[in-house]
Length: 91
Image (cartoon, rainbow, N blue to C red; front, side, top):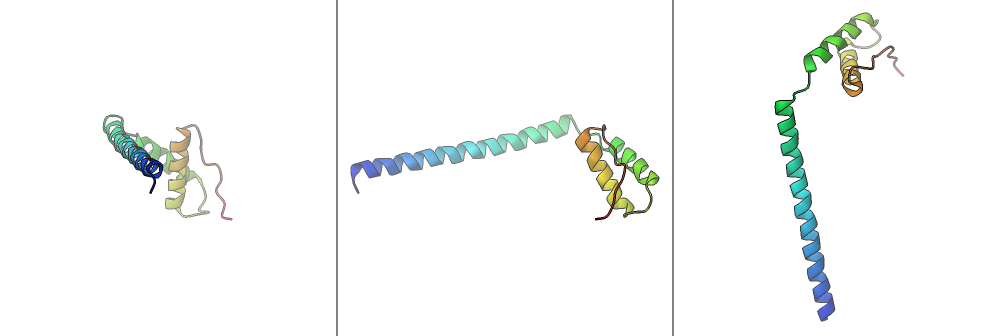
């Protein structure tokens, strides 16, 4: 191989290695940050579950109550308590 090709391959390996190391560090730091956040600022699951159960009690038996509770809890979490499930229909 020519000298230029060898140097190009060396630069490519160093560059790809650097990117790989940086991405691994980003993943590790993100996991640590999530663990710290969950430890000191846990989600208020109990309130969401109580509100979801109240919604389940008011809706007719169109679908399974457990499924409706999961849907209601998901809506509560995603909308941060501002949204509610008004109607659920099977398609």
